Image (cartoon, rainbow, N blue to C red):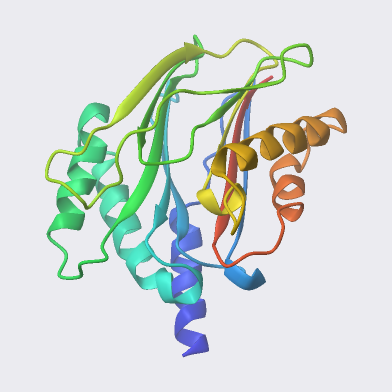
Length: 235
């Protein structure tokens, strides 16, 4: 079983490899499975337009955790990787929802956050389907603010409610996306977890942006859920 899981993990990580961005932009990610294993049901799908003008990214958390969630994550990642280059951005999450509803399992559920960003202007749009809210870094003075896009998880209803928000990243600003394993744990309200993340991410940024996603995830208390952090920054 372990060799098979290792192969599935390698495929999932290959699908989520972040593309090199044009000068002036940087991105990084870090993931950790439940109970400290290095893979689980969280994954990233990305697409950089051929003219390098727009970046499309989706961070997904499938139902389940640890190695048991990898097969479902790999299947959904494959579907999203095809969809992200074939359908308009507005249709991506609805198409993923239809895919999940066609699956035989009653547990084919996922939360997702999608960001589409114009790399020339910094204009971005975030769409969320039941995912924890993104954070935006607006400099040391203002710290990390909480985005308002929430929505409904995918695979539940034929027409899920997807919330969105828009903004523009200026030089030195950043967006931080994460899965619920970063901010949720037994006996802790998610709002408390988000406040913990804001404080922790602020502290990590003060020591530099290099490796900040990994440093944040390494500070998350070990738990029974997978966790992932994705940071997109404009230099």
